[in-house]
Image (cartoon, rainbow, N blue to C red; front, side, top):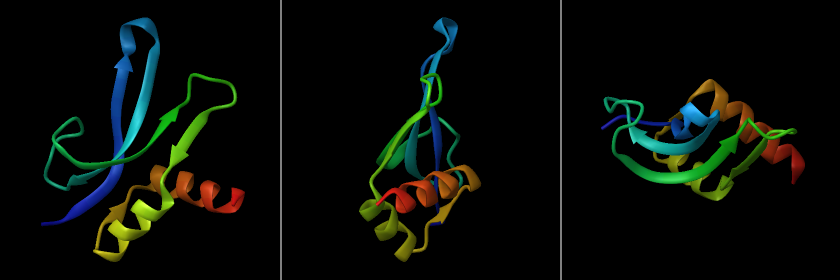
Length: 83
């Protein structure tokens, strides 16, 4: 099974309160499909944007073969630079 680490939409877009979960999910699943694990969140509606990523969980999944999306890779790199 191929696994991706990507964003999953959450919140209420009708109220302009869209935020994102960063999830580990099967590559064949839909964007809002069943997740294997939630590893963080991202809220771009706040200024500055708020994000939290559990780097230990991300590294564990990457070691097992998971591929990060470009956006998640960017957030991961920002998180690593802050530490």
